[in-house]
Length: 329
Image 1 (cartoon, helix red, strand yellow):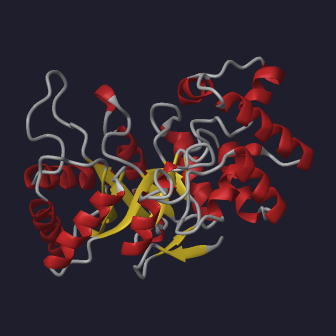
Image 2 (image 1 turned 30 degrees about the horizontal axis):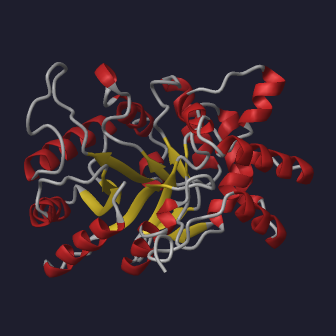
């Protein structure tokens, strides 16, 4: 396993991040434990989750599954760099209660304590804001985070789905308080969705944040979806189906699959390997439902893409380029 620093920190993390969103809704507790054991055995030490995973009446269930895995011992917790997220409403079912969501100091305090209880741990390595809160001042957010740092409940703070300007604003506010600020950003980034290259990734690089792409296969779109339709009669659904309905994406995906078929390569593995070649990328999040999906993701670490193949991929999925050139001169 190859490791890298998480942004400008001294924290060493694996080049793949184990995403756990499927644990609970798609994958049972026992199989989830098996996948986490296999990931750790392979040297994958960076695990990501969120307080809302499990969804609906089962929100929080994913953190509970990870907590029961930690409780088995064997130095599991000590070996893992644990990241979780907060923002979504975690209040009682029914009409949304105020102060049970977003990034107020009250909700940050409430959310971290609830996550620690579910995760059966006394600290979180990377505590992430799952979304921008347009109503809460940056100083209030950092004041709450400073308390958690002093209490030892978290070690670092990160963001998810933040635009470039918000990364800058938050880190400038942290600097005024002599705080480290954000150390990572989780963003939607893959071959088919490259808008993060305009401002998010440059902002992250400028402020020393590690970039952690989510949905590296674009909801399965880059995992050989068209070939599976033909060979297995499997109907495409979810994010991939929505994306395929938009021209010219279906033609691009077909060209992508044809190119990799010519090279004898698996589309999903190439999509992950491509992200590992991109500047500023710490490692993509892989969210396996099964052990075989984890094994496929791990193979991407050993895949070397030629300059010719990288150029061909850029031809099929051209990125927008940096701002302002992406939309101006």
